[in-house]
Image (cartoon, rainbow, N blue to C red; front, side, top):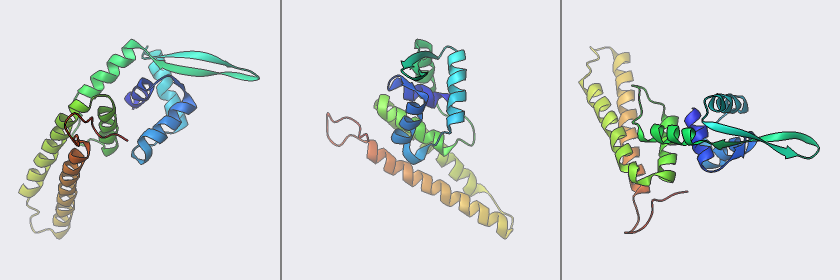
Length: 176
């Protein structure tokens, strides 16, 4: 999830520990990142030219490395943010990460993003309604569980849309 790192660096340059803290503070329970994974992503992003690493002298200890977004990193971040999520089984955590960055940097794109997800869930619901479990109680139980999950997702999406809808004319998107 290198795009997560790019988005966090869009908030400003930071060293690894700051980035990890930023993810925790900004995304809370929606996303967790291990330090080892974060540093692996930073290495790959630096090798790809998407971030720039600069040592910051620290008296009495090794210098800290501060990472900053490059123009190529900014372009990659915006391309990812503007593209529709891919894959049949998209991760909920990824949905929330995109939602966060859209609300933060491009709130005008939120209605389209939420509508795309609603369309995906509506199609999934239609497929589940068309399934015939053939009298198998276990298969029917699984179908009903998935149907309830999809219906819950659709209800949640409607509520999320309300949360991010401007409260009054001229008002910006609600943000935390």
